[in-house]
Length: 351
Ligand code: DP6
Image (cartoon, rainbow, N blue to C red):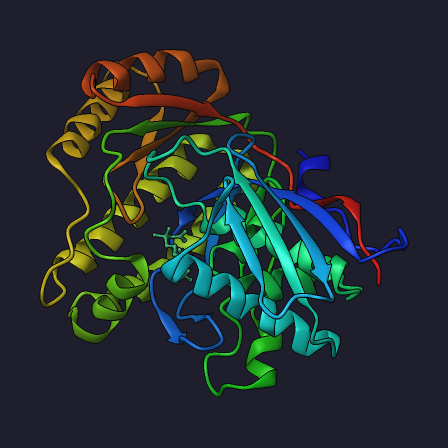
């Protein structure tokens, strides 16, 4: 897994003409969840989190500086971006321009390969790809740590997609805000013995979210009596997870993954008003995962801000796990992912 844990550093290359750069990044699935911010402006999380970057559903983003333009032009899968998606991308470009000391607008074209309506977050791969492409196009020479910090400002989980394989995102300093806090919160690769893991993704409902994860995490932190205990236990989960990864103990990695996710959902269920992302179909898939374990197949579930289930298992068991969850959620789609690479520049850069 070592090569997957490295990420390409951005070195701008001058191509002449208006600067342009294209980057690719993959989604990641958290095994130890990020749920709750302590600074919404800087995207500083309350707790450390740990994830596996996938090898499916890449996002490819091209950023071209447009010296003649008065506004940024943003397309997502060929259509002009609108609303909140557009606002977040432009806010991110403003941050990059401020760092680069440039005011030129940009043309941003993003292609997402997550099947439309799959209900899987694309903000992690999206902002990791945008961070790498925009940094290169605007001539910022950033190492992987700095890119991770930058990607964090688009979406917290994007900080982890800068790296391949397993990555931990440090919450950083627990007090204070501003530059020192910002500098202290970034992701980095985690060493793991060879687990040969797979994540089987069961898409049980492709509909839009009832509550955005941003709003849901805010409400949970503000109102859930279970939030602080979960945040404290998540620190223990992380320590246990690191040890399990070092040992290459897939069963332990899976057990910790599942308990951390169920605990996160418990915090939301106790929020006021409650946030419930898990649907009847989610529970049916969870039952099929329990049955797999009873049948001797190590398989463990995790869910994010939606009803879909990601099942961690050994690569050798992935087809069997996929078949079981397909049977449990017949209306949905099932995808098998392995560990993927970190975000990287495909071409271009430089002013
Ligand atoms: C449940 O990274 O999408 O997937 O930082 O507000 O953009 P923002 O949130 P986002 O939240 C991800 C939450 C999660 C858990 C995780 O990926 O760690």
